[in-house]
Length: 92
Image (cartoon, rainbow, N blue to C red; front, side, top):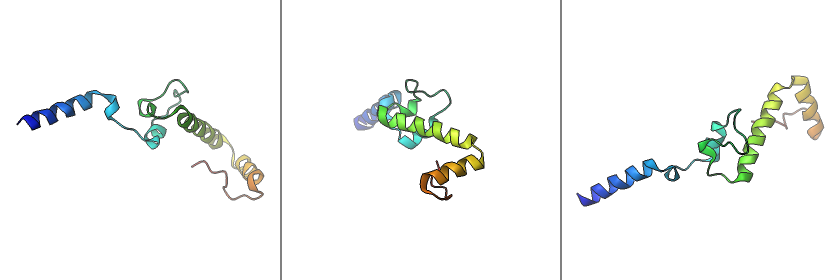
């Protein structure tokens, strides 16, 4: 009985604390929005180092820029990357 009560109390405390929730870089990447900035992080990104978070928001920005490019512009960048058009600059 006492062990069950302590387990229930520990679970309740854990649910009330965000430190008990661990998010991955993938969770953070999915949570990024247009409002995400270096100082305005989604909850899912709070545990990441500043360097890792910066990489994720930069990747998102570059992917958005690439998505807005025409196929010809993407092909030109791809050719400049390694001398052939082979999707070597893909941002997936």
